[in-house]
Length: 236
Image (cartoon, rainbow, N blue to C red; front, side, top):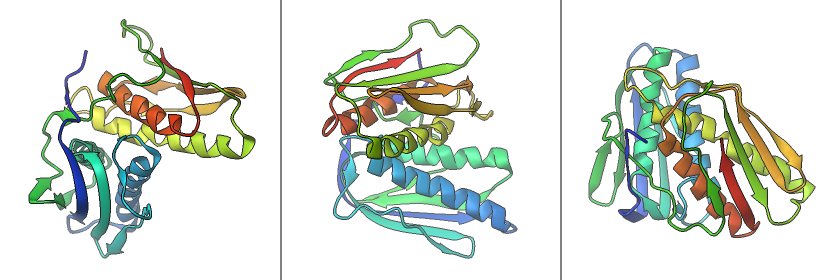
């Protein structure tokens, strides 16, 4: 069903340093584009896409930018090390936007990970989530995708936009799940809203990526479920 090996068995707690340098000649648009990709990863960690992994201490999405260099330092707890393969995937996707790197790496513990080397690893879903998970078994079709998340209770109005914004981060993460390493994963046209007070309706006009990306949705829902009980995650 997927070309990636999924695992979340190797968890890491402690400091992480992420450093990325663009190749010479990068313009201001390229610098902003890469910064946004790194910030998206940090926001995704904060939201819960890599649950149970989380920030330790105050959650921050700050990235220091100096010329064509990017750096951030964070503390994490119980983070699957395969989360860094997702960061590497969304950075590697930048080549489809004519952006090149001198290097990109993450340092955690005694390990220094080259983020531009594709390992074929991605995070697994939480096993036995406390809600129903419905994934399609037949992937034939027009490559549109519908994600529905049903909560046990109506969601307060002041929380709805935050949840929609967090779920929307999945679009950029999906670029790390290309079916062909030489091609960009076609992902575009997402629209999200609450279909009723208890149900998010997130529709992707085009979504052609590896189904392993759905594992991140399970993890996000597990993170949300701690404060907003979820009944069902449905993908079709």
